[in-house]
Length: 122
Image 1 (cartoon, rainbow, N blue to C red):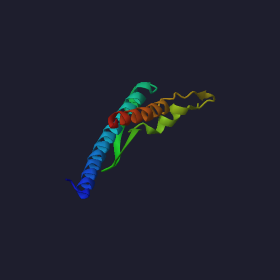
Image 2 (cartoon, one colour; image 1 turned 45 degrees about the vertical axis):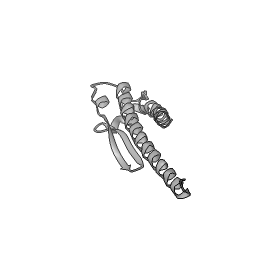
Image 3 (cartoon, rainbow, N blue to C red; image 1 turned 90 degrees about the vertical axis):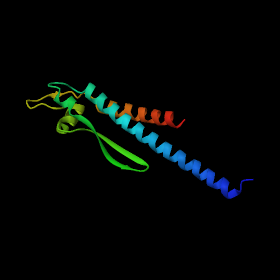
Image 4 (cartoon, rainbow, N blue to C red; image 1 turned 120 degrees about the horizontal axis):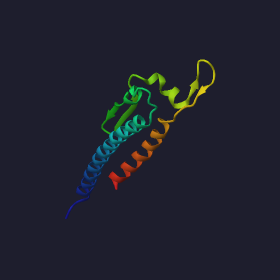
């Protein structure tokens, strides 16, 4: 007959396995979400020459055993991201309307991440 110590050891082993599974599922979901957000921003970005839309990339900014942090950013056109998102004043007067393309992608990314994590852990 198994002892209480064996039972506790088996429970801890099971919890450790679940924790590792949850960590890997979460990291996979974060990577997939970052890529999805980058693609959505690029697809909906204002396009004159296309350089701004192509400048978006993902970057791993932090990771440990239980966490992964990814950043989606414009690698060489970051100076104009705010202006294109929110609009800006023109030199001779008047305004250029903004074209929201970052905020909607961020919101969709939050929903996607939540659904991917729930799907992986259920």
